[in-house]
Figure 1 (tube, rainbow, N blue to C red):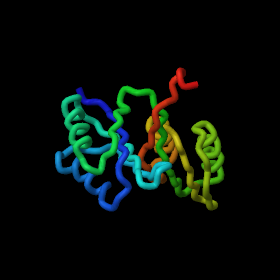
Figure 2: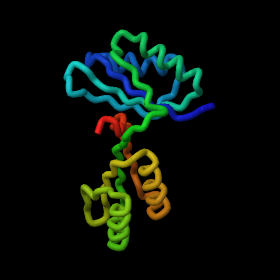
Figure 3: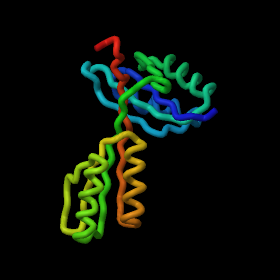
Figure 4: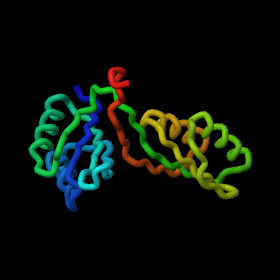
Length: 167
């Protein structure tokens, strides 16, 4: 059964590691939904958060191949784990009237987004939500401002939730 999967990789923070890891996926014709990379508290280690859609067999192959990669320190499967996940998204809305600006102000409040820049007829909204929350915001904006929006999405980042036993 195909389902959305999430993995986190701790990798050596070296030149070419991102290219080699992403090349591993493209070489096997695996399609990534999202890939985000950043350094950790240890500047010699980067953390990759990867989302893909696959069946169980393919996903197990992916994890095995990643574990065999020299640059990979650790592979963490978040698929069935409680996690906190967010995605950064910017939406620019063009051709806004004064009424549109008031409507955008109301929408951004509902979605807990921020209007980070504006001009008399253009607004730029920043949304840091789950992928589903950002999808919902886009659907609403597309219905209200059809043909006037520009969307830029960053990859999602995730971290394992803190269990009750750790509190």
